[in-house]
Length: 125
Image 1 (tube, rainbow, N blue to C red):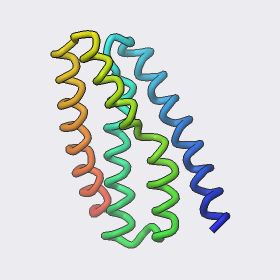
Image 2 (image 1 turned 45 degrees about the horizontal axis):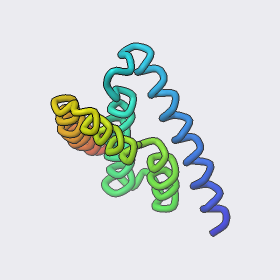
Image 3 (image 1 turned 180 degrees about the vertical axis):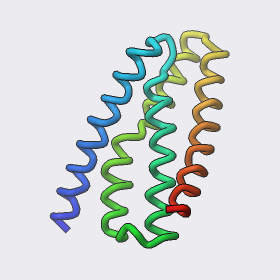
Image 4 (image 1 turned 60 degrees about the vertical axis):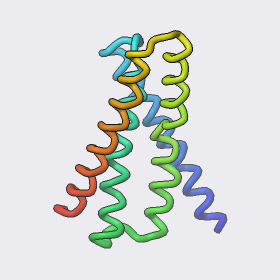
């Protein structure tokens, strides 16, 4: 049990650092007038979640213990859904209704589509 907790923590550290890196790179290209970094991390995270889940559940290529470490540790820190909701709230607070709607619905649609693509990719592998 202690080993699993340590591994989840290490995976979470890697997920957090990866999320920070993705956000920094995306913001350097796209600017900071819209939460593009969070959108990229959430969309990528949904794809990776679908891929890992499919490889574990459909293809049995990832053991259940490893799946927990990846999905709970890495993905839990990498996908920033709480930040997504917070940033949407900030846009609403700033009365940026169009941007808030685009952020909320755009990321939700992109995340769902990426999840389906990840599931499909996992079935192909």
